[in-house]
Length: 147
Image (cartoon, rainbow, N blue to C red; front, side, top):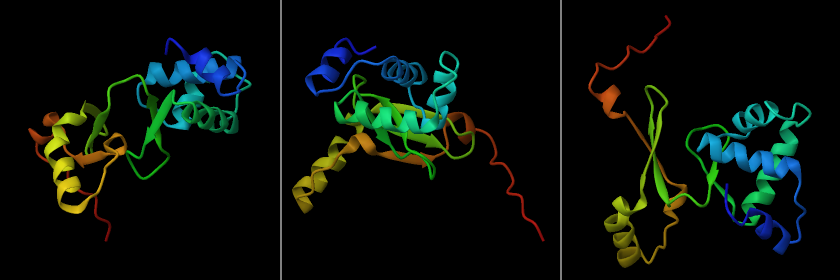
């Protein structure tokens, strides 16, 4: 768990609560988790915690810089710990796997955006969809078409 998580919360006027500790631990254990997945993880220990508590806690943890989120799919955001390296998410549209790769692979692209358009990017929220190496080496699954 982030070494200074208690200090970060206190410095920002927040109390240390068991729920905050459990949510932060769940985010770190899952590596990438939606609020619903984090709830399931937390409920292994604390069955009384509900989804609104998860959302409020994630908001607090994000406001003090302990977690961040990315929009990996069309549903809820996916949260991960900030102490991880800045990364891009590779999302397989076939099997659903998510791989984190160093953001440095996009350095040329982000430099071009800055130099050409004056646009500064936040690469930490980027997800790229496609097929992972395992799925790309096998034939695509047929699409179910109803008449």
